[in-house]
Image 1: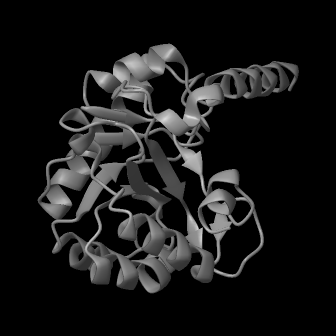
Image 2 (image 1 turned 30 degrees about the horizontal axis):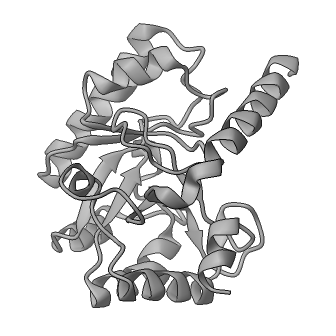
Amino acid sequence: MIRRILFIIYQRIYTLFRSIRNDQFSHVLMFHNISNENNDITISKENFYKLITKLNEEKRICKIEDLKYQSISKSVVITFDDVFQSVYVNAYPLLKRLQVPYLLFLNIKMLDKDNYLTTEQIKEMLSDSNCILGSHSINHIFMRNISEEKLQLELLNSKKFLEKKFDVICTSFAFPYGSLYACSKKNIIQASKIYDYVFTTINMSFDGDFHNIPRINVNNNCKFLKEMIK
């Protein structure tokens, strides 16, 4: 517990220092639940629509790979973790209508479970080229303390499963939990040998390192949302 608290303190100091130049860079946004629930992984449908509509009007939304070929200033990448049923019900209609790109990070054990996306829903979303499928591991566990062999299985087997089941090329991986406490630098290096894009949940802007991509957790109370729809 003490070790985890120290990691949390270090991460907050680290992100605070890095956030000084936040407005100069792109942001990778992380969504989970789009509903009226009240918790730190949820954004209301109303706020989600306001945010996405404004970002789209400003032509800021792009795919992660686009950042290799254009200025990273002010661009925004949309990602979803886990993925909840509310993403299909409340987010997908707007994303489809506006034709904005987004990344779904699927955890294998959650597929077809209650309150999560079904195989058929994902296939429907993937029929649009703006939807990209990435791995969120098999078991949604903390990676820092597992063996290299077990991590390799989480990384590689999830990729193989997604590519076979959905007939896609899976080039992106998002660490479950994704904090400095949840995944180590060694974990990130190992993931980078398999995936072109590796994502964490460290709350700061993107500075150009595609093998350590931080993301802003967007909920009803986050600073980014409040600044965008004020």
